Image (cartoon, rainbow, N blue to C red; front, top):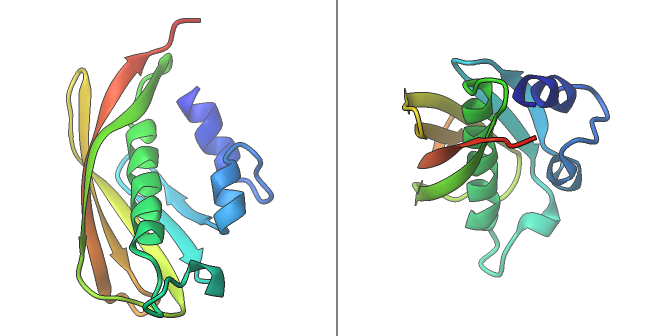
Length: 139
């Protein structure tokens, strides 16, 4: 499942991840070493204080970390987020977000990952960390 899904999610006009379609997420890179997802910002992402909602940034980081986890699973395995933290360093009003996720450690049952969220100039906006449970699929 992971390899087939990861191939399909990178195709233009993909339909395997409706959230990516809804938000406008672009897959720039998926490998076992690094995942890069980009999100062009829209006015609909702005909250009451006039900046992009933190939840939008967190969602992008979570998806990047989930995809690096998937890239490191074996066939017959899937995953679920079991905990995540997000540190917001600065706000953004327009442009593009980019989440870059890397693997910290893969255990038998838990995968630990991290992500940085940057703007289109490479400025650091936030940092995230998460743990994902490895689930053996029963077919």
